[in-house]
Length: 74
Image (tube, rainbow, N blue to C red; front, side, top):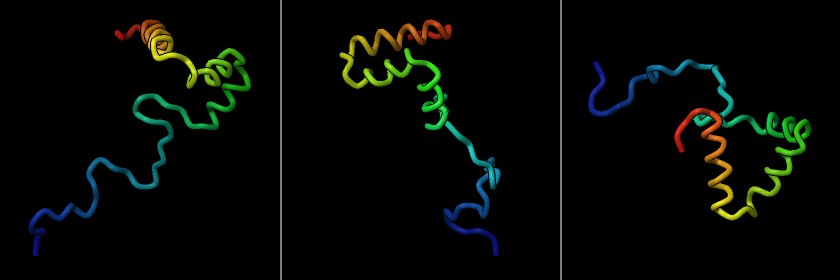
């Protein structure tokens, strides 16, 4: 007998088993990459360490500069 009701199909279309993806859609990188970058770039390490204590306006300004440098709109 065929599927009845709202049961999901046996396999989710578009998903490939055994594949592991790192990062997120937003471009996040795995923590081990961040640690390696912190060690190789002292300016970035300092920014990361200070980020939580920066006022929201300063964070927004930094993010606007990053977005502008990527050619995007803030």
